[in-house]
Image (cartoon, rainbow, N blue to C red; front, top):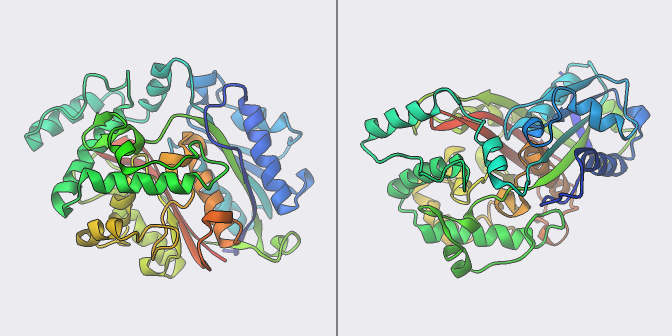
Length: 406
């Protein structure tokens, strides 16, 4: 396998962008990535495009890559359409990395995009709600609730006024509260940190700092979640240019190397101690030849603020019993020992699901190149992204983990 480098990244601002089409979003992010790399259309051997919900939201199915890329003059090259829930674009990145590492291509484009905002919020929630086993989810959760001797996990508003995932995340979070003495205030502190980082990120959907009281009083979603702890619905796109070692030398003397790229799938289980994150994390660290303690920073899939600390625990980065202290003592701040979600994370940067994975990679690449501006981490050497998607049983259905080194 050949060494693979990221030589350029670009993204749109994430947010509610009704005036922009999927072609507009892709054009903006891809143009930015190519300019960052100093690459031209003629340099591209192939393109991998991740998207999850364009069919439901815009009606565009089947040839999303060809439609969006041809509109900006990228045509004729092999194009791969990748759909894998919220992990769509990070899965596309994995496939692109595999192709370059294997010697199939020397220079490829990866892009993820989504238009998830609609005035009819139920349409957006319906799109999100399809990332489950639609035939079995109701029965599974009913049986699971009986098995755990708890009330129904889903509330009457699920899928109508809120995504069904919020109820499921809330249930999962409560288990960690009981296990590690975490409180709703701890999660509110994480949200405050996320919004502080997002306020420094010109690509973030929310660019305003908030107080602990504002988070706690922002409206109940499903205990312990409040509105400001939950990722917003929005639109956006992000892109990257990947090259072989030889090709990368033509573009930059500051490449960022892909040290690990792993993808995994969940299983319809009810065990909270055997999760996809726990199973996949060791594979990523082994591939990169490092331990969790060697990371300089990480972007994790915080669809809700509690997910940030839960993921750090499941990856073996934060000992569970130390989780409250990590939050209280600012360990995850940009100047802390383990900077987490320096971009603002999904909770502040936004979560246009098909673009989320590439948005995380965009942040890590900027950080490792020292180009993250006022949220720059000091001398980072190794960065990681954790991007999950969908629900199978009570766990993620799809996931991609990546580790990068400068």
